[in-house]
Length: 164
Image (cartoon, rainbow, N blue to C red; front, side, top):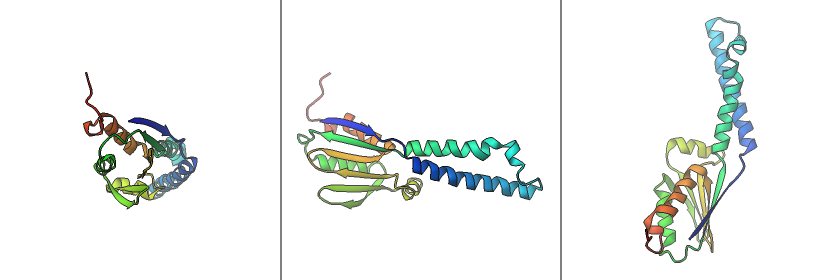
């Protein structure tokens, strides 16, 4: 079995959307807090410019970097008995459930509330498996890394015993 991984560039649209939303929310919150405390409304720009401008940019860049799509290509898997069922078990064991399945493609979505929140935003927590002569697993880096580790190190995916 051969495994190859490709990582996509980070999504600039997602970065811009997240930055703008965080700028509005965080600065609106700071503006409201200063208004309630009786200080001049825009005084927080002088004191906490890091919170006002730099923090939304940093948080959005981390989110956009981690939301990148990763492709995992699996070739020469045919000698492994019931490979499809075993891979399905591994993916379902990583906190996902099947959204749709047919003969050529299976789509999994996250089950935890925190990851479902990110799945609603840009469908970042969705894993798609395309079945054919080569299996293509597409999804977020966190999930694909766990699947790759299972394919590499789990004994049920080995065709012959490993000699040490």
